[in-house]
Amino acid sequence: MARRPFIVGNWKMHKGPQEADTLATELKRSLVGGGSADVGVAPPYVSLPAVCQRLQHTGIFVAGQDLHPEPHGAYTSAIPGEMLRQTGCEYVIVGHSERRHWFGDDDGVVKLKVAAAFRSGLLPILCVGERLPEREAGRAQEVVLGQIRTAVAGLPVDQVAALTIAYEPVWAIGTGRTATPEIAQSMHHAIRGLLESDYPAYVAKQLRIQYGGSVKPGNAAELLAQPDIDGALVGGASLDAASFVAIVQAANG
Image 1 (tube, rainbow, N blue to C red):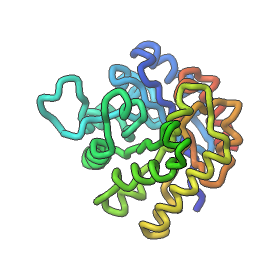
Image 2: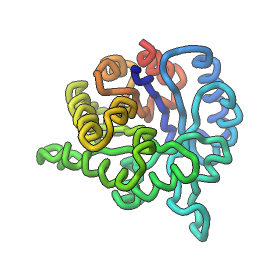
Image 3: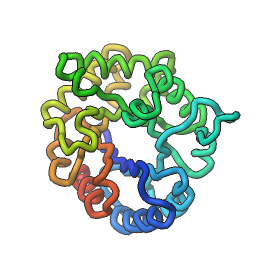
Image 4: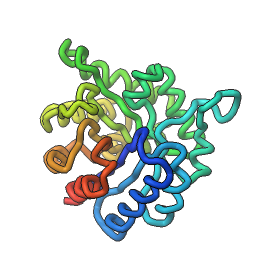
């Protein structure tokens, strides 16, 4: 069975509740009622209630942008997975490069967050990717595959199969630079190969690998045409309804 493309818009620190509701309304109007791709959005925490309510029963998934590894406790400003799930989220982004860079989420923390997501009933979107010096040193695959192996170590096989992995070359996020389709496909193929070597065959066939890194309407179709690219984690282009819908339409073929 072919993997359904999965397009997720990461709104990052944009769109308060009113703006988020407006954007969600535009997406609901444009995207509900067909298409071969799964679609999701990840609003800021304060906008989750408005977006979850607006998109309820539409088939458009809502994701949290992060979660704390613990279910509760004295962790001021943190959000546990259970609260995200109660709000209406079905997915959560884990290990985004900005979390790794600005907030110190190393591979060990990301591993704890992946496990916490599953305990909370959320499906993780696991972000992995290399920095420019690592790519220039010829270590890109070593870094990315190492991030994955650490994050999934000890997980039951059925949970690994339920993951979404988002490959985001850090040097291509918010810079306007995009990995060529060939570069992106090469890393996606390596990730698929890791799954094939470490797990039963159905895991590699089922698990979806998104590409993230300056995905736009102009390059989406070529990226999504690659055999191992199963969708996109979209940043800036997801803040405009027309741009995001165009990327979804590229996934729909």
